[in-house]
Image (cartoon, rainbow, N blue to C red; front, top):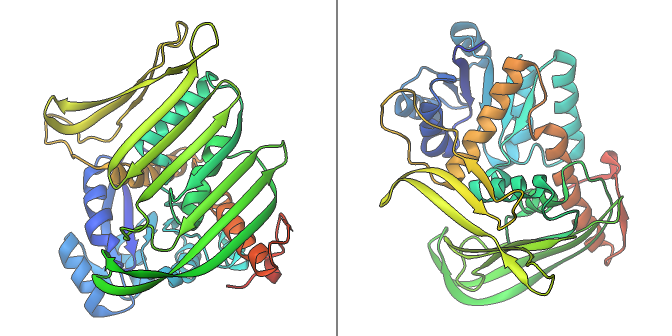
Length: 382
């Protein structure tokens, strides 16, 4: 059970080459990439050659000849659910790129198919797995902040990504019960789209939601469809308000400011927690740890340590935060398969994040009417 687990990439989306290839190489003590599958020979061959593994257009033949245990599904955005189900029905534990499916019925079909076969599903929801988010979650686990009452995702990620960040502060075991949503389109002044490399007028879709939870907690979600590449929408923030303090993250691009506060002695002022990034060398290199200096005499230091490295005295991967998050998704599934446990996030959490986004849109379509959860899967369409 400590030997590397054999992995196949199911699909030829760009992330197969630029993201998962390097991540799997960095995790080679735990995983071995053995094959690539694609619908078309040209794209399958291109990714297979780039990653140095055999390529197939016949999934049954791939499984028969290379014997993978895990399939990482990397396909066109709208094909994710379809190919994810195909991989499960072929007998693979799967890591699905987001969302688990666009339709709740399709998500349930995948989940039920995996359950019937005794297979594990993890979903590559990496936003809350990034180092800074992981450190904040560790701080919340200490109890220093007490109970978190409200959580905000303000352009912290689109759709289910932003909902996942918002829910992480409240606790993934908190149960949402009702949603109110507002969705509108607006015309924007001409400007450069970094991702599309176009200039001209653009249309923006804004999504806003209020999510109430069973125990009285509240989540606030905001998103703009141009938030990833528009100079008009440079703001990015996630926040939580807790019984004994609060946390605010604000970023403009990669420039991140973090304020985490508890009460100062005497109860008349905030006490700011100092966050330190520790690198392999003073001038950079691999990220070794994030350390929070709390000022609390009982819990003075809370740390997140980067667990991803190559064995021995070899060159260490200098991954950025998103790659660390993706590696955590992979290793969550590896651990679940090895130990026969549930993945740390998993299919049900991914389904719930998508359900909340669908509820926001349904509420907006009904003029802001309150929508109760859970939704009826048979009534959901995109």
